[in-house]
Image 1 (spheres, rainbow, N blue to C red):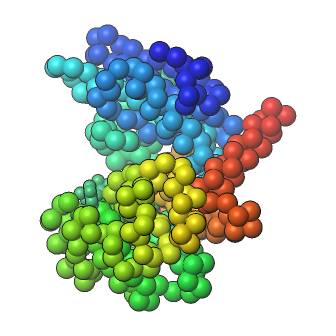
Image 2 (cartoon, protein in one colour):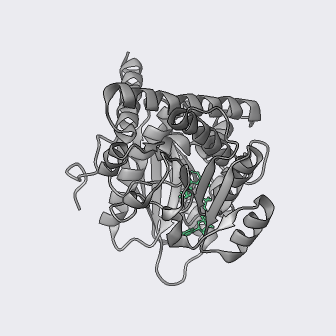
Amino acid sequence: MSAFEHPSFDEHEYVLFATDPETQLKALIAVHSTARGPATGGCRLWKYPDSTAAMEDVLRLSKGMSYKNAMADLPLGGGKSVIMRPEGDWDRDALFQAFGRAIEALNGLYITAEDVGVSPDDMMNIHKETDYVVGLPEGEAASGDPSPLTAEGVFKGIGVCVKHAYGRDDLEGVRVAVQGVGHVGEYTCGHLHKAGAELIITDVNEEALERVSSKYGAKVVKPDAIYDQDVDVFAPCALGGVVNPDTIDRLKGKVVAGAANNVLATPDMGEALRKRGILYAPDYVINAGGIINVAGEVKGAYDLNWVRGKLETLAETVAEVIRRSESEDRPTNQVADDMAREILAAAAAKKKG
Ligand code: NAD
Protein backbone atom coordinates (compact mmCIF):
# COMPACT_ATOMS: atom_id res chain seq x y z
CA MET A 1 0.00 0.00 0.00
CA SER A 2 1.40 3.37 -0.95
CA ALA A 3 1.27 6.34 1.39
CA PHE A 4 3.39 9.26 0.18
CA GLU A 5 2.68 8.25 -3.43
CA HIS A 6 -1.03 7.87 -2.80
CA PRO A 7 -3.15 10.12 -5.10
CA SER A 8 -5.04 11.44 -2.06
CA PHE A 9 -1.89 12.22 -0.09
CA ASP A 10 -1.73 16.00 0.31
CA GLU A 11 1.32 16.59 2.49
CA HIS A 12 -0.58 15.38 5.53
CA GLU A 13 1.41 16.19 8.65
CA TYR A 14 0.98 12.73 10.15
CA VAL A 15 -0.70 9.46 9.23
CA LEU A 16 -0.75 6.96 12.08
CA PHE A 17 -1.74 3.35 12.43
CA ALA A 18 -3.21 2.32 15.79
CA THR A 19 -3.57 -1.34 16.63
CA ASP A 20 -4.59 -3.33 19.67
CA PRO A 21 -4.70 -7.09 19.02
CA GLU A 22 -6.70 -7.82 22.17
CA THR A 23 -9.71 -5.78 21.01
CA GLN A 24 -9.01 -6.25 17.26
CA LEU A 25 -8.53 -2.51 16.89
CA LYS A 26 -7.14 -1.52 13.52
CA ALA A 27 -7.42 2.22 13.02
CA LEU A 28 -5.84 4.93 10.91
CA ILE A 29 -5.59 8.49 12.13
CA ALA A 30 -4.71 11.20 9.60
CA VAL A 31 -3.63 14.63 10.75
CA HIS A 32 -3.84 16.77 7.63
CA SER A 33 -3.04 20.14 9.17
CA THR A 34 -2.51 21.60 12.61
CA ALA A 35 -1.75 25.06 11.22
CA ARG A 36 -4.92 26.53 12.74
CA GLY A 37 -5.17 24.32 15.84
CA PRO A 38 -5.52 20.69 16.88
CA ALA A 39 -6.52 18.44 13.99
CA THR A 40 -10.22 17.83 14.54
CA GLY A 41 -12.67 15.57 12.74
CA GLY A 42 -14.83 12.53 13.24
CA CYS A 43 -14.08 8.87 13.65
CA ARG A 44 -15.68 6.52 11.12
CA LEU A 45 -16.32 2.81 11.74
CA TRP A 46 -16.61 1.02 8.42
CA LYS A 47 -16.21 -2.41 6.91
CA TYR A 48 -13.27 -1.62 4.65
CA PRO A 49 -12.19 -4.38 2.26
CA ASP A 50 -8.55 -3.67 3.12
CA SER A 51 -6.24 -1.07 4.63
CA THR A 52 -5.70 0.56 1.21
CA ALA A 53 -9.39 1.51 1.11
CA ALA A 54 -9.19 2.75 4.71
CA MET A 55 -6.13 4.83 3.80
CA GLU A 56 -7.94 6.40 0.84
CA ASP A 57 -10.85 7.38 3.06
CA VAL A 58 -8.80 8.81 5.91
CA LEU A 59 -6.51 10.86 3.64
CA ARG A 60 -9.43 12.35 1.71
CA LEU A 61 -11.67 13.00 4.70
CA SER A 62 -8.95 14.58 6.85
CA LYS A 63 -8.05 17.06 4.10
CA GLY A 64 -11.76 17.87 3.80
CA MET A 65 -11.84 18.67 7.50
CA SER A 66 -8.93 21.11 7.18
CA TYR A 67 -10.86 22.94 4.45
CA LYS A 68 -14.14 22.86 6.34
CA ASN A 69 -12.69 24.06 9.65
CA ALA A 70 -10.68 26.80 7.93
CA MET A 71 -13.68 28.10 5.99
CA ALA A 72 -15.78 28.10 9.17
CA ASP A 73 -13.05 30.20 10.81
CA LEU A 74 -12.64 27.70 13.64
CA PRO A 75 -9.46 27.54 15.72
CA LEU A 76 -9.02 23.95 14.56
CA GLY A 77 -6.91 22.02 12.11
CA GLY A 78 -8.13 19.09 10.08
CA GLY A 79 -7.98 15.40 10.88
CA LYS A 80 -10.02 12.25 10.67
CA SER A 81 -9.82 8.68 11.84
CA VAL A 82 -11.20 5.42 10.52
CA ILE A 83 -11.60 2.15 12.36
CA MET A 84 -11.69 -1.01 10.28
CA ARG A 85 -14.73 -2.91 11.53
CA PRO A 86 -13.53 -6.22 12.98
CA GLU A 87 -14.77 -9.58 11.70
CA GLY A 88 -16.64 -12.09 13.88
CA ASP A 89 -17.26 -11.46 17.58
CA TRP A 90 -15.87 -8.30 19.08
CA ASP A 91 -16.47 -6.15 22.12
CA ARG A 92 -17.61 -2.71 21.02
CA ASP A 93 -16.96 -0.96 24.33
CA ALA A 94 -13.46 -2.42 24.57
CA LEU A 95 -12.67 -1.48 20.96
CA PHE A 96 -13.60 2.16 21.46
CA GLN A 97 -11.75 2.32 24.75
CA ALA A 98 -8.63 1.02 23.00
CA PHE A 99 -9.14 3.67 20.33
CA GLY A 100 -9.48 6.27 23.11
CA ARG A 101 -6.08 5.18 24.49
CA ALA A 102 -4.52 5.63 21.04
CA ILE A 103 -5.89 9.17 20.86
CA GLU A 104 -4.71 9.94 24.38
CA ALA A 105 -1.19 8.89 23.35
CA LEU A 106 -1.22 11.65 20.72
CA ASN A 107 -1.57 14.18 23.50
CA GLY A 108 -3.94 16.59 21.73
CA LEU A 109 -2.53 16.41 18.21
CA TYR A 110 -5.92 15.02 17.11
CA ILE A 111 -9.39 15.54 18.58
CA THR A 112 -12.03 13.04 17.57
CA ALA A 113 -15.82 13.24 17.20
CA GLU A 114 -18.71 11.19 15.81
CA ASP A 115 -18.96 10.14 12.19
CA VAL A 116 -20.62 7.40 10.15
CA GLY A 117 -21.09 4.13 12.07
CA VAL A 118 -20.20 5.63 15.44
CA SER A 119 -22.71 6.42 18.21
CA PRO A 120 -22.86 8.77 21.22
CA ASP A 121 -22.23 5.68 23.42
CA ASP A 122 -19.02 4.99 21.50
CA MET A 123 -17.98 8.59 22.18
CA MET A 124 -18.51 8.03 25.89
CA ASN A 125 -16.28 4.93 25.72
CA ILE A 126 -13.54 6.95 24.00
CA HIS A 127 -14.01 9.62 26.67
CA LYS A 128 -13.24 7.03 29.40
CA GLU A 129 -9.65 7.06 28.11
CA THR A 130 -9.14 10.58 26.79
CA ASP A 131 -10.42 14.15 26.95
CA TYR A 132 -9.52 14.69 23.29
CA VAL A 133 -13.05 13.95 22.12
CA VAL A 134 -15.98 16.23 21.29
CA GLY A 135 -19.63 15.72 20.35
CA LEU A 136 -20.35 14.12 23.69
CA PRO A 137 -23.99 13.40 24.51
CA GLU A 138 -23.66 14.30 28.19
CA GLY A 139 -21.49 16.19 30.65
CA GLU A 140 -20.70 19.83 31.32
CA ALA A 141 -19.19 20.68 27.94
CA ALA A 142 -21.51 18.48 25.84
CA SER A 143 -22.90 20.18 22.74
CA GLY A 144 -25.45 17.44 22.00
CA ASP A 145 -27.07 16.73 18.62
CA PRO A 146 -25.38 18.93 15.98
CA SER A 147 -28.25 18.63 13.46
CA PRO A 148 -30.28 21.70 14.59
CA LEU A 149 -27.21 23.93 14.23
CA THR A 150 -26.30 22.37 10.89
CA ALA A 151 -29.84 23.12 9.73
CA GLU A 152 -29.61 26.71 10.98
CA GLY A 153 -26.44 27.21 8.93
CA VAL A 154 -28.00 25.60 5.86
CA PHE A 155 -31.06 27.83 6.21
CA LYS A 156 -28.90 30.96 6.43
CA GLY A 157 -26.85 29.79 3.44
CA ILE A 158 -30.01 29.20 1.37
CA GLY A 159 -31.07 32.77 2.24
CA VAL A 160 -27.75 34.14 0.94
CA CYS A 161 -28.06 32.14 -2.31
CA VAL A 162 -31.69 33.17 -2.88
CA LYS A 163 -30.77 36.81 -2.36
CA HIS A 164 -28.05 36.48 -4.92
CA ALA A 165 -29.88 34.38 -7.51
CA TYR A 166 -33.31 35.96 -7.24
CA GLY A 167 -32.52 39.39 -5.76
CA ARG A 168 -34.81 39.00 -2.79
CA ASP A 169 -34.28 39.33 0.95
CA ASP A 170 -36.98 36.95 2.12
CA LEU A 171 -38.13 33.41 1.39
CA GLU A 172 -41.88 34.08 1.31
CA GLY A 173 -43.30 31.85 -1.42
CA VAL A 174 -39.89 30.58 -2.51
CA ARG A 175 -40.25 26.93 -3.61
CA VAL A 176 -37.71 24.55 -2.15
CA ALA A 177 -37.26 20.84 -2.96
CA VAL A 178 -35.76 19.10 0.07
CA GLN A 179 -34.18 15.70 -0.62
CA GLY A 180 -34.11 13.80 2.68
CA VAL A 181 -36.00 14.82 5.79
CA GLY A 182 -33.81 13.10 8.37
CA HIS A 183 -32.12 14.93 11.23
CA VAL A 184 -30.90 17.99 9.33
CA GLY A 185 -33.58 17.94 6.59
CA GLU A 186 -36.45 18.10 9.06
CA TYR A 187 -34.99 21.03 11.01
CA THR A 188 -34.19 22.80 7.74
CA CYS A 189 -37.81 22.36 6.65
CA GLY A 190 -38.90 23.90 9.95
CA HIS A 191 -36.85 27.07 9.32
CA LEU A 192 -37.95 27.30 5.69
CA HIS A 193 -41.62 26.87 6.59
CA LYS A 194 -41.40 29.55 9.25
CA ALA A 195 -39.87 31.89 6.66
CA GLY A 196 -42.84 31.29 4.32
CA ALA A 197 -41.19 28.94 1.81
CA GLU A 198 -43.23 26.32 -0.05
CA LEU A 199 -41.83 22.84 0.50
CA ILE A 200 -41.65 19.81 -1.71
CA ILE A 201 -40.04 16.88 0.07
CA THR A 202 -38.91 13.34 -0.50
CA ASP A 203 -37.38 10.53 1.53
CA VAL A 204 -37.20 6.75 1.52
CA ASN A 205 -38.50 6.76 5.08
CA GLU A 206 -42.31 6.99 4.88
CA GLU A 207 -42.73 7.79 8.55
CA ALA A 208 -40.42 10.80 8.41
CA LEU A 209 -42.13 11.99 5.23
CA GLU A 210 -45.57 11.84 6.80
CA ARG A 211 -44.44 13.65 9.93
CA VAL A 212 -42.69 16.49 8.10
CA SER A 213 -45.42 16.79 5.50
CA SER A 214 -48.17 17.17 8.10
CA LYS A 215 -46.13 19.53 10.28
CA TYR A 216 -45.18 21.91 7.47
CA GLY A 217 -47.80 21.35 4.79
CA ALA A 218 -45.13 20.01 2.44
CA LYS A 219 -45.96 18.29 -0.83
CA VAL A 220 -44.51 14.77 -1.01
CA VAL A 221 -42.94 13.29 -4.14
CA LYS A 222 -41.22 9.99 -4.94
CA PRO A 223 -37.43 9.96 -4.38
CA ASP A 224 -36.47 10.09 -8.04
CA ALA A 225 -39.04 12.80 -8.87
CA ILE A 226 -37.36 15.37 -6.62
CA TYR A 227 -35.00 16.47 -9.41
CA ASP A 228 -37.87 17.35 -11.77
CA GLN A 229 -39.79 19.68 -9.50
CA ASP A 230 -40.53 23.21 -10.61
CA VAL A 231 -38.77 24.87 -7.69
CA ASP A 232 -36.40 27.77 -7.02
CA VAL A 233 -34.01 25.84 -4.77
CA PHE A 234 -32.87 22.23 -4.67
CA ALA A 235 -31.72 21.35 -1.13
CA PRO A 236 -29.94 17.97 -0.97
CA CYS A 237 -30.07 16.77 2.64
CA ALA A 238 -29.59 13.01 2.21
CA LEU A 239 -26.88 11.49 0.06
CA GLY A 240 -23.73 12.52 -1.74
CA GLY A 241 -23.20 12.44 -5.51
CA VAL A 242 -26.70 13.66 -6.32
CA VAL A 243 -25.57 16.32 -8.80
CA ASN A 244 -24.31 14.10 -11.60
CA PRO A 245 -24.65 13.77 -15.39
CA ASP A 246 -28.00 11.98 -14.98
CA THR A 247 -29.62 14.62 -12.76
CA ILE A 248 -28.05 17.96 -13.67
CA ASP A 249 -30.26 18.72 -16.68
CA ARG A 250 -33.38 17.93 -14.70
CA LEU A 251 -32.80 20.64 -12.08
CA LYS A 252 -35.14 23.59 -12.61
CA GLY A 253 -34.19 26.27 -10.07
CA LYS A 254 -31.25 28.64 -9.88
CA VAL A 255 -29.88 27.38 -6.55
CA VAL A 256 -28.44 24.11 -5.20
CA ALA A 257 -27.83 24.45 -1.46
CA GLY A 258 -28.24 21.80 1.22
CA ALA A 259 -26.69 19.83 4.06
CA ALA A 260 -25.44 16.70 2.27
CA ASN A 261 -21.71 16.04 2.02
CA ASN A 262 -20.10 15.50 -1.40
CA VAL A 263 -23.13 16.80 -3.31
CA LEU A 264 -21.18 16.96 -6.57
CA ALA A 265 -20.48 13.49 -7.99
CA THR A 266 -17.25 14.90 -9.45
CA PRO A 267 -15.66 18.35 -9.11
CA ASP A 268 -16.41 19.23 -12.76
CA MET A 269 -20.12 19.25 -11.87
CA GLY A 270 -19.41 22.64 -10.24
CA GLU A 271 -18.56 24.17 -13.62
CA ALA A 272 -21.47 22.30 -15.24
CA LEU A 273 -23.89 23.92 -12.75
CA ARG A 274 -22.37 27.36 -13.32
CA LYS A 275 -22.75 27.00 -17.09
CA ARG A 276 -26.45 26.26 -16.58
CA GLY A 277 -26.84 29.41 -14.47
CA ILE A 278 -27.27 27.43 -11.24
CA LEU A 279 -25.65 28.79 -8.10
CA TYR A 280 -24.08 26.06 -5.97
CA ALA A 281 -23.32 26.60 -2.26
CA PRO A 282 -20.22 24.45 -1.62
CA ASP A 283 -21.27 21.65 0.73
CA TYR A 284 -18.50 21.92 3.30
CA VAL A 285 -19.06 25.66 3.64
CA ILE A 286 -22.85 25.63 4.05
CA ASN A 287 -23.05 22.48 6.21
CA ALA A 288 -20.40 23.49 8.76
CA GLY A 289 -22.94 24.21 11.52
CA GLY A 290 -22.35 20.78 13.06
CA ILE A 291 -18.60 21.16 13.39
CA ILE A 292 -19.10 24.73 14.60
CA ASN A 293 -21.35 23.28 17.29
CA VAL A 294 -18.80 20.74 18.48
CA ALA A 295 -16.05 23.36 18.27
CA GLY A 296 -17.98 25.03 21.07
CA GLU A 297 -16.85 22.07 23.21
CA VAL A 298 -13.18 22.33 22.27
CA LYS A 299 -13.18 25.86 23.63
CA GLY A 300 -14.23 24.55 27.05
CA ALA A 301 -17.67 25.44 28.39
CA TYR A 302 -20.20 25.20 25.55
CA ASP A 303 -21.44 28.66 24.57
CA LEU A 304 -24.42 28.89 22.22
CA ASN A 305 -23.83 32.60 21.57
CA TRP A 306 -20.34 31.87 20.26
CA VAL A 307 -21.78 29.13 18.04
CA ARG A 308 -24.47 31.49 16.68
CA GLY A 309 -21.80 34.12 15.93
CA LYS A 310 -19.90 31.55 13.86
CA LEU A 311 -23.09 30.73 11.96
CA GLU A 312 -23.24 34.39 10.92
CA THR A 313 -19.65 34.05 9.69
CA LEU A 314 -20.71 30.94 7.75
CA ALA A 315 -23.36 32.96 5.90
CA GLU A 316 -20.83 35.72 5.15
CA THR A 317 -18.40 33.13 3.83
CA VAL A 318 -21.05 31.70 1.48
CA ALA A 319 -21.58 35.26 0.20
CA GLU A 320 -17.83 35.80 -0.22
CA VAL A 321 -17.47 32.55 -2.21
CA ILE A 322 -20.28 33.71 -4.51
CA ARG A 323 -18.71 37.17 -4.97
CA ARG A 324 -15.34 35.68 -5.87
CA SER A 325 -16.90 33.12 -8.17
CA GLU A 326 -18.54 35.93 -10.13
CA SER A 327 -15.58 38.26 -10.24
CA GLU A 328 -13.18 35.46 -11.20
CA ASP A 329 -15.67 33.74 -13.51
CA ARG A 330 -15.09 30.36 -11.87
CA PRO A 331 -17.28 27.76 -10.20
CA THR A 332 -17.99 28.13 -6.48
CA ASN A 333 -16.51 24.74 -5.54
CA GLN A 334 -13.14 25.70 -7.03
CA VAL A 335 -13.24 29.12 -5.39
CA ALA A 336 -14.01 27.59 -1.98
CA ASP A 337 -11.13 25.10 -2.29
CA ASP A 338 -8.74 27.91 -3.22
CA MET A 339 -9.95 30.10 -0.35
CA ALA A 340 -9.46 27.21 2.09
CA ARG A 341 -5.94 26.54 0.77
CA GLU A 342 -5.06 30.24 1.09
CA ILE A 343 -6.28 30.33 4.70
CA LEU A 344 -4.29 27.18 5.53
CA ALA A 345 -1.13 28.43 3.83
CA ALA A 346 -1.34 31.74 5.69
CA ALA A 347 -1.82 29.92 9.01
CA ALA A 348 1.09 27.57 8.28
CA ALA A 349 3.38 30.51 7.43
CA LYS A 350 2.35 32.33 10.63
CA LYS A 351 2.97 29.21 12.71
CA LYS A 352 6.47 28.81 11.31
CA GLY A 353 7.10 32.44 12.25
P1 NAD B 1 -30.03 11.32 8.48
O1 NAD B 1 -29.61 9.92 8.25
O2 NAD B 1 -30.71 11.67 9.73
O3 NAD B 1 -31.00 11.79 7.27
C1 NAD B 1 -30.83 11.40 5.95
C2 NAD B 1 -32.22 11.16 5.39
O4 NAD B 1 -32.09 10.88 4.01
C3 NAD B 1 -32.93 9.97 6.02
O5 NAD B 1 -34.23 10.33 6.45
C4 NAD B 1 -32.96 8.93 4.90
O6 NAD B 1 -34.10 8.09 4.96
C5 NAD B 1 -32.97 9.84 3.69
N1 NAD B 1 -32.59 9.18 2.44
C6 NAD B 1 -31.71 8.15 2.27
N2 NAD B 1 -31.66 7.81 0.98
C7 NAD B 1 -32.50 8.64 0.32
C8 NAD B 1 -32.86 8.79 -1.04
N3 NAD B 1 -32.37 8.00 -2.01
N4 NAD B 1 -33.74 9.77 -1.37
C9 NAD B 1 -34.27 10.56 -0.41
N5 NAD B 1 -33.96 10.46 0.89
C10 NAD B 1 -33.09 9.51 1.25
O7 NAD B 1 -28.73 12.20 8.25
P2 NAD B 1 -28.50 13.72 8.66
O8 NAD B 1 -27.73 13.76 9.92
O9 NAD B 1 -29.78 14.48 8.55
O10 NAD B 1 -27.50 14.18 7.50
C11 NAD B 1 -27.98 14.43 6.18
C12 NAD B 1 -26.81 14.80 5.28
O11 NAD B 1 -26.15 15.94 5.80
C13 NAD B 1 -25.71 13.72 5.17
O12 NAD B 1 -25.15 13.78 3.88
C14 NAD B 1 -24.69 14.16 6.21
O13 NAD B 1 -23.40 13.68 5.88
C15 NAD B 1 -24.78 15.66 6.05
N6 NAD B 1 -24.35 16.41 7.24
C16 NAD B 1 -24.98 16.23 8.43
C17 NAD B 1 -24.58 16.97 9.55
C18 NAD B 1 -25.28 16.82 10.88
O14 NAD B 1 -25.12 17.71 11.74
N7 NAD B 1 -26.06 15.78 11.09
C19 NAD B 1 -23.54 17.90 9.44
C20 NAD B 1 -22.91 18.07 8.19
C21 NAD B 1 -23.34 17.32 7.10
